[in-house]
Length: 191
Image 1 (tube, helix red, strand yellow):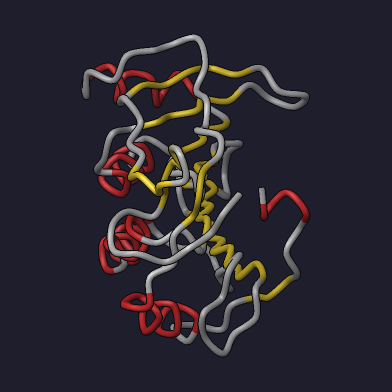
Image 2: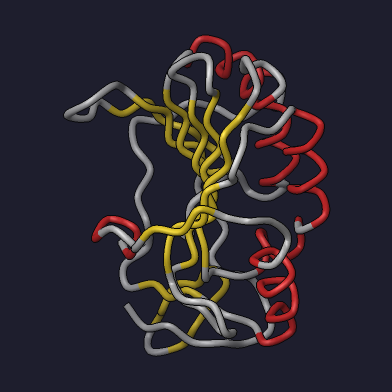
């Protein structure tokens, strides 16, 4: 996987040595895993709006985990967990405030989990959203948005993650916004 910075989206496909923006065809698939089943949602855009809409059918409060895989500032790569549960409004405000950064830069992954149920959403570095838990609550949202189900979602190979200097100040702002509980990256965080 080649990683580079350039103006454009957070995720690209390498085609004949050229870095080309990659956008999924606005689809989702249900996957069987070694744990619980999950939905893999590959929207064509509006990731944060979709994430917020799916959170609205989940039971709060929520735990937030910001996974910084490729730091471009003074803080270390690692897992930054919110020190206390957040309301839906607090999560919505956070997501909307940093929408451009989350959607436009590939240095991170976001986890938002219900503290009262098994529901979990992960907005990953590959521009997909994973949904776990009460999946039947999420599927109607996908249907209302005319996002069809397919048999599987494949990441482009080879691909690249993009890190943009214009977002470095937002990385610093997020990491200084509260007393995050820090832990080291896990091997799976860098996939």
